[in-house]
Amino acid sequence: MKYYWKNGFYIDEVHFDFDVETGEYTVPTGYAEITEELYRNLLDGQAAGKRIVTGADGLPELAEQLSPDPDPVANAEKLLRSMQVRVAALAIPAADDAAAFTLAPLCKTWTAGTHYDALEIVNHEGRPYRVVQAVDSLEHQMPGSAGMLAIYRPIDPAPGTREEPKTFYFGMDVKEGLYYTSAGKLYLAKADLPACTYAPGTAGVWQWEEVADTE
Image (cartoon, rainbow, N blue to C red; front, side, top):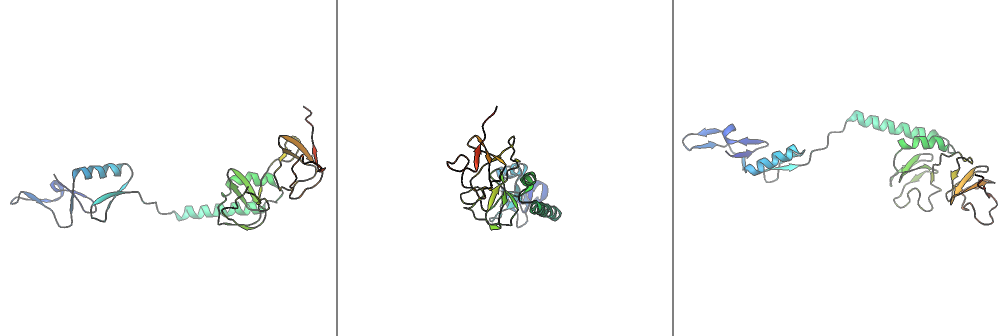
C-alpha cells in the first residue's frame, strides 16, 4: 500500500486502477508519493487542531488554522458598544467620580498612540483614570507616571467623608471640607488646594488638619 498527496490524500489500492501487465497501480501525473509515517503524522496533527496544506515542495505539511472571517454584525455591535460607552463617559461631570468609577470597567485600556478627549475614562494597570485635557498618548507618558496628573487623574469614588475618606495623591485637586488619608493618617482639608503638591502633614501647611483617632 502506497500513499500519495494532491491537495488531499490518496491510497493506491483505493483510488487508482491496477495494471495487470505491470502488476502495479497506475498513478496519474501530479500525485506525490509520501511515506506512511508522514501520512500518519499529518493525520495526528490534523486531529490536534492543525490543517494540512501543500508546501512549496509540493508535499503536504502542517500549518496553523486560519483565523475565522470577521463577523461584520459582531464587529458593528462591538463598535456601537464602544461608542455608547465613550458617550456615556463624556456625559459624566468631571467631579462625579462615583459614576465614573462605576462605568470604568466598560471603558478601554489605555494604549499609546491614541487620541483621548477630555472626560474620557481609561484603565491602566488595574486603576481607572479620567482624562483631564485632550491628549495624544505617548508610550513614556502613561497614566500614573511622573508629571502626568494634569492629563490623567485617578478616579477615587470615595465621598471624602470621615468614614470614607479620599486617598491623597500628588497633584490632585483638594476640596475644602473633605477628608483624605495619607501615610496611614486621616486629614481634613481646611481650604481648596488645586493641583496640590503639599502632602498632608507637610510642616507649615495650615490647610491640612490631622484628625485624631477617637476610637
